[in-house]
Structures are given as C-alpha cells and as structure tokens.
Amino acid sequence: MASAARRGKNEPEVRPIIVKKIVEAGHAAHHGGAWKVAYADFVTAMMAFFLLMWLLGMTDEQKRKGIADYFTPTLVELKQDSAGSNGLLGGDSLISKDDYPHRASQTGHRSIVIPQSMTGGAKESAELNQDRQTFQQLKRELDKRMELIPELKKLKANVRFVETREGLRIDLVDEANFSMFALATDQLVPQAQRLIGEVAKVIEGVPNKIIVRGHTDALPYASGRTGNNWMLSTARAEATRATLASSGLVIDRFARIEGVADREPYIAADRYDPRNRRMSIILAWRGESAAGTPTPGGL
Image 1 (spheres, one colour):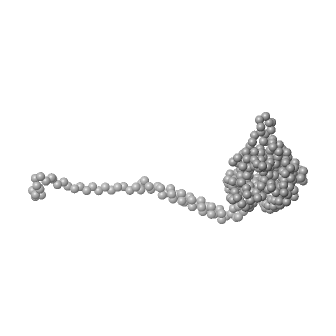
Image 2 (cartoon, helix red, strand yellow; image 1 turned 30 degrees about the vertical axis):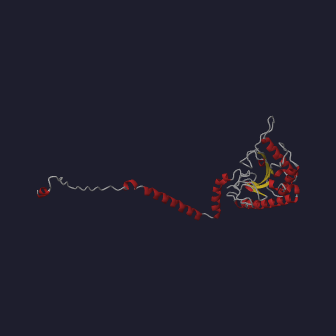
Image 3 (cartoon, helix red, strand yellow; image 1 turned 180 degrees about the horizontal axis):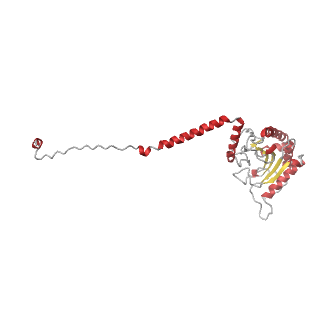
C-alpha cells in the first residue's frame, strides 16, 4: 500500500519482470552416426592394406612378377593402333625419328622388354630371352646391310621393328613417294624385291617360324573393278612370301600367310595415309608362344 501511495496518479502500473529459461536439446541425435561410417571405411582400408602387405610378404619374386603381368593387359588399349602394333611396346624404328603418337621423344630407341611366361616354365623363359637377344642382333645386322647398299640406304625410314604378342614384326612401310608394289597390283618393284631379299638373308639363320601379313590403306577400288582390299592384301602377302622363299627361306618356316586389308592401320588417325600400306614379316616367339599363340601376360 505504501508503494501505491508513493506512485503518482499519472504513472503507469509497474509490471513484474518474468525471466524464461529455455534449455535447447543437443544435436547428437542428428550427427551421432556419421563418425561410425567414416571409422568403418578407415578400418576397411587398413584391413585391405595389411592384407596386401601380408600377401606380398608371403610371395617370392617370381610370384610377384606373375601378379604384375596379370594386371599388364589393362594397359593394352593405351598403345593399340600405334604404328599398327597390337602390343604394349608399340613400334620402334631403325632410325631415331618416327611418327609414333605414343613415343616419349623424337630421338633415341626404346629398350626391348619381354615378360617371362607364367606357364611355360624355365625352358620357355630361356627361349624368350634368347629370342630377345637374337632379335636385337637381327636389327643391327639388317641396318648394316642397308647402309652398304645405296638403293636400300634411303629406305631405312621404311623399315620398322615392332615387338608384339606374336613375336618380332618387321614392317616394310610405304610412303607418299614410295610404294613397294605397283599401283593396285601384287607386283613388287625392284627396290622392294631387293629389300625383302636382304630381310630373308638376315632371318635365314634363326629357327623362328614366320608369319607374313599384308596391309592396305582404306582407299576403295575404282567403280567396276572386281577386286577389293582383302584380295589385294592377301595377294601381296603371298608375293612377299614367294620372294622370301626364292631368297633362301624353306617352305616349312612359314606358319601363316594373311591379308587383313585396312583393319590394322599403321596410322589410325588417317586410314587413307599411304603408310598404312605395308608388309609385315613376323618372327614368332618359340616354344608354346610361337606361331601366333600369345605369350601369357602379353606385351
């Protein structure tokens, strides 16, 4: 009452101050499971890592090489159609400059690598290693022979060595200003005959089986002609085989004679490029991988 007496007539009535305390609930219910998922992923990754370490510790060098070779085919597409190659190594040339799109530089030569077989045993591995050394010698010998013959020396750029699943492939490649055959025929020009003869002399002394494969570009025959590129590539392969045989190679050395038309282009980006016209003389790997049977693991 005393307080009411002291308040003036025009003063408003004093209202009480009310303090409301609100306690908010935590957010644990919304985020409580996220760390569990992350932790589970971490434990799974660690388990896979330690399992890998255990497997590597339990295997020897040969088995680890086998595991590496098993995953090698996943890289095959990187070099498919590189210089017409069907293997990882792509192509290599007798001279330093070439047009391979997969090449690391314009100069120098790559080393030749041949994987050991996982199923052929020590004998086949020894044969592959011996083939590797022999092929290197053949490259050097053919190079020397061409250097000594003026008309062939200028064709060194037309000779390519490529290692594939089948073996060592010697590609004799056409150019815009040089063709091994008369236009749209299977008639070898004199220079090409001489070149194939020198190749025959170089490979005559090795025991490897031989595969001859003919290639053309994608240019079609003129309207009204009855021939086609399949027939032409096969006829040219046979003409090459006949020239090799007349130069000293016995008939038993030949494993296959093939014509593939323009299906395996040397220059994949331009199927009409004259370099797609070529002859391939392949020295097959010996043992179980000879005569076209792919080496396990692949190149």
